[in-house]
Length: 519
Image 1 (cartoon, rainbow, N blue to C red):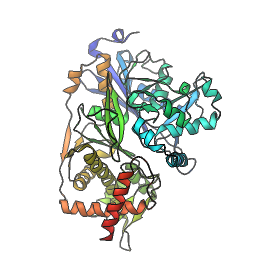
Image 2: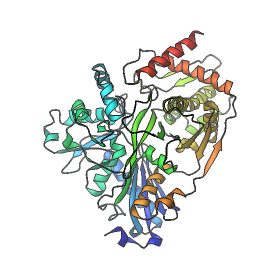
Image 3: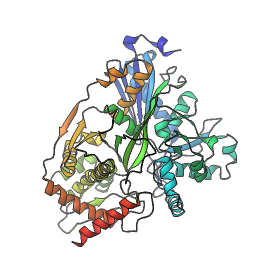
Image 4: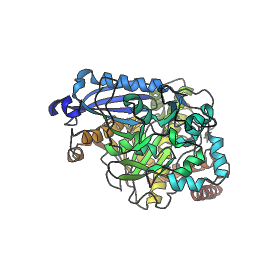
């Protein structure tokens, strides 16, 4: 049944799904931009060994189907013009192409089991090639090493892969396969695999050979707004998937960012700082940041990004240590005016941007006999703001443009105290989105345009409610706090820097920090 025949324009809706690490959310949006329904399904992770992060592919599939169904309880399922999917990005899995059964777990984006393989490739000098072609440094965060590990486990000689028996994909690819039977991947998600040529927007033969990934296992790369075939399962069966975006990319789209010059920070388990680029993919490398494809809606739109591995995860970890919840930790942190000299560097799995140092070790420093639980709690929250400021500073240097304000979104951004902390330590204005579920909303907007529910002009004028937060701390106080933090980061990164393609930043940072420590 075509989307035009499913419902009249007055009652038509889009279902947008945000499939994340800890939950799958769904919302229903009509032509006026009103949210008519929401659903939330919690998910878990498994950690079978230190540094290993896995999820159940079938649980993720079922959570999406369930979220779609629950969100439509107050709406007529026949009114659904299309589906939008916003998904976690670098997580990857393999499955039996014929039966659709998973051949292992989803290896999460936080998984670090491939750290030794990353070191081996870097020592062999593969870093510059990978960065030049894919825009990404060699790091266990990205999908290529995970996919190699999965194939080595199930198909070490690649006989099944070359015989067309195995299919591989990121979470968006898996979900589209489960919902429609098609094996495809959205271009922005494909750019996060480290197997795509960023300029050509196609799988790259050199990278596939380097990571031992046969082309036959990979999905077709399609534009972000390329409609799929009709869904064959869920209450929305018959409607197509009209748009797919990576979660961070979808948040950028929801903020209304269509041109370079604006930067957003998404707060979550980890964090993403992203802005559109003015130049093409083949331009010079960005110091400490990565290049990525933001979206492809007829033409590729490129972005820079800084990926932080642990922000909200730090507060969750410390809350568990205290046998409390994050709300209690937040209340405790507010009882002191500073961290009392304490720094928590949450390098649980190394450090991401702007350091890309997988050998960094998590550390707590600066404590003494007068240190209280409140000081530790405040240090945990300060580590979120300070890591984000590190990336903002690197971005400002790389794009040679002052960043005076930052768009903020994601669950933790609803914490007004944390946003004030971010503004104070960054000495920048924070513009916090007052709209929840921004990752779902962005792909809802793109799906609405693609399906004909709304025009692009309609989406551009959608009100975007924000709260402005300005610095209250003096610049001198902020500088002193950041200096203490930079010294703590240098201590956590005690090993010599390795060649990642971002070596200049590593060396310069260590040299300047060492100089600061000496004084």
